[in-house]
Length: 231
Image (cartoon, rainbow, N blue to C red; front, side):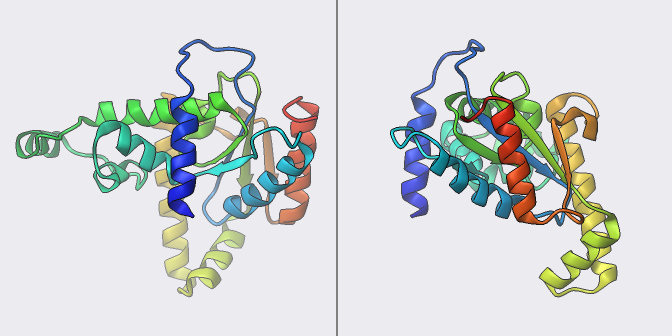
């Protein structure tokens, strides 16, 4: 199933080649989240609902997450493992860059990798009917008119409790993990945006403590309708 989806996404990706911003691009929804918020669940349910609302002749809505890594790696001629450090929120030092360049004929600079990732994400967004979870999607696709950028938040202690329960770890370990992931995700967003990103940079900010997943899906659906992303 995964291979079929990746092939489908690659075909859709390759079909878009225009570098110009057009009103016909999209629609696309991005979902950013604080660590511990249910973005993947919401994206999956939302894609199903939007597909049912659409004309049956249209392509179904797709959730895009790790597929971006695979497509970018394919474009670079590398194995996904060679570039996944970007999404693990890690950076290569200048020394690492030099050593890698001398040790591998397939070496690609971090700048080239990030540029390719940006292009892959933007092309998926241009083609439309995709929900992109994380991956700095909101900052990369801000220029597409038919787009909606959502941010999921929740109080820190609430998220720590959830992380502790889901990962079966202590509250202390959950706190450390939550704070660490929040920091790393912020670094990724800010790096791709070229500036510090705040909640006011999103179209819609939802509190996953006070709203159920079903309620958040309905709110996003209605907002997408009001923004003319769907009919």
